[in-house]
Image (cartoon, rainbow, N blue to C red):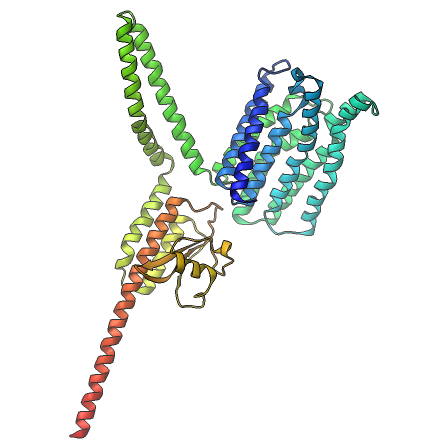
Length: 471
């Protein structure tokens, strides 16, 4: 699925899910505390799906996890007891939709787990098992509708079977076992990511298996639904499940700026009520207009200051890494030894971008006609070697060019944490590539000058030898 199509689908899906949840207010059944827990959990789950789907659309794992969350949100939002006010037709339509969507959550989670680690025949069988279980899961969930419309099934038995739905329970168990197999088959950072995703999703999976069974409280599902997005958020930050630094930054800035504006507004309203309104309406109106004007002008300044503080407090290391990259970009042209230049470039890139590898690939070598090298030579913009079916081992290749001279590429491998390269990181790396190109051009020019002097000296020596012979 292309990125634009994926993002369009994501917007439509999340808007539809939030609309369905909005239609449940006020609730059509007696309000309980656990209902609000589930309702808030569904909202948070939809928002988390939006964050990971929008920020990492190029990652198959992120897309699958997003689909897991969207399917879960729709399965909960379309529960028939949420549409009691809409009549039998709406209730049956919601029930049928939920029956078709609910099996997708464990199916997508199994596919998500399958993206980690080495593929084995046993793991492929678990994916096949999901399809085999999805059919009876849908049929059992649709049984109450059939019983109500055609009376071919005992209504009580059909409803009890749909509430427990052993086939759907088995789907969730298969998904959980598939994630355990993925943990065993993975290594390094991949293992950490699937481990954290499994830990975060375990309460919801367990609740989905046991909810509806005799003796199990109904509240378990709503509580697990609230814990799921909280667990995923913790996994994203602590377990490095996904790169959500930018989203966290924007959310923190937006929240703090909104809180400051709200506090200022409340304080000003209190000031008007206590001190100004007794004086007269005209003074109240003038001060209100003046405050609105000052607050509107100051909002940008408040946003800038809050953004600056958040960057300093939460993203100190990231800013320090960017500063180190930019500093080396300025120093690179003044390094006078080629081996030292390349060694320092590789060490700096790996230390301050968390890249798994880094390499300086000169132009004119074996990779001269590699698709990525040709693209860099022609366009002089960063490219993704894997997208061009290049033999260069890396996720990002940057052109090393000084003026009109193309001298090679700076190739950065995938990050060890699985994150992508941010725009400001790419800009800093591009500056390093340009600085290294300048140094290489100077060194090459110096070498050519020395070689010219050596050739001149050798020619002079031959002339002197000839003159000595003629004497």
